[in-house]
Image (cartoon, rainbow, N blue to C red):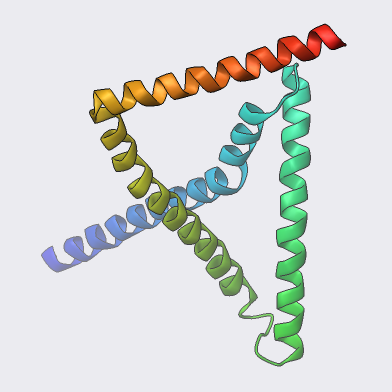
Length: 155
């Protein structure tokens, strides 16, 4: 009787882990492909109203998906024509491509962060160099300001 109870508990535990895995996997997919890109485009949009920002965001997002989807369909058609892919293995390919895209994005972002963060900490750590850099930026901004004033007077 103990073995039966243990096996039942083991099966229930695996069922719970399976559900948690599915929730984690699909929520990550939704965040990666829908929610985060929309929020990024809304934040970077130059539109003035919220509805304009959301519309602009969806436009950019669907343009990106059209390009990626077109290339994916083209690749799938080539693979089917060459006999390397069947309809039975298509879902596996879609999951593989999605995960590959996510891994490449993570590698690029982490690579950028692993270089940029220590570099910025190093720059901000040396106060005299930071002050020289700020003086340089102020001088450059003042030159642009003078040019703008001059252009405004001549207009």
